[in-house]
Image (cartoon, rainbow, N blue to C red; front, top):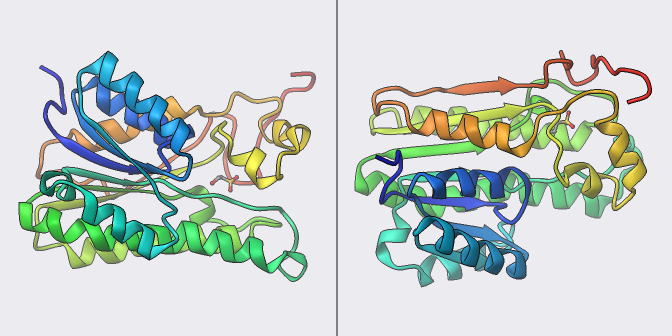
Amino acid sequence: MKMLEGRIAVISGASAGIGKATAEYFAKEGCNLVLIARRLERLKELKKDFEAKYDVSVVIGAVDVSDFDQCKIFFNSLDEKFKAPDILVNNAGLAFGMEKLIEKPVEDMDKMIDVNVKGVIYITKLFVPYMVEKGGGSIVNVGSIAGREVYPGGNVYCATKHAVRALSNALRIELVDSPIRVIEIAPGLVETEFSIVRFKGDKEKADNVYKGLTPLYPDDIADLILYTVTRPPHVQINEVVIMPVNQATTTVIHRKQNE
Ligand code: 8X3
């Protein structure tokens, strides 16, 4: 028996990295999917691939989660059953640059706040009332160790991930009288497009982030998310911090030479 047979999951930031891996882990377990991301072409490929391989239904939406109107139009276009998912994974997020706050371009700061914070709020605000009405489910917010620590150059990104933690805690309080569980996953270094985006396409800088250690991979996070949402319904895993074995904090990382 597949663990998520016939269930429905909404995943933001689903076109790559942790979101994509989570979508595939869920699909393998029989879960129908609502995949949200900005890149339509990639979503189309995933839909085709998952529907063929796993015999699940996949609905896709080319949506910028930081734009409430876009979120709402997409949400309103969904069949009623997809408005009330069993699992909501707020995964969309990004970082730009490592400059000091006073040197950081305002557009970069705005973008991080808009996607990482407003994106979580908007998607939550749309789907969670229907989850409450349905009477159960799991909300998974993908935070970061940057939501627990602050490191040089992290400023606004760290602030947004602290906000994700605060929002997760707030939701857990507000949903305490419902069977909905709120789970925050806070990873350390995960090798994805994250660093390429952070360094605006500078591959050398991006590669250096993961140099000399085995980082986590998107599958490691997907595996953990699947674990948290498949516990018995009375169990709520509030938060999990997950790092590569050679990472202790955002800045204490053991790197082997010449690797
Ligand atoms: C990503 C982890 O340490 O690069 O959220 O900020 S870190």
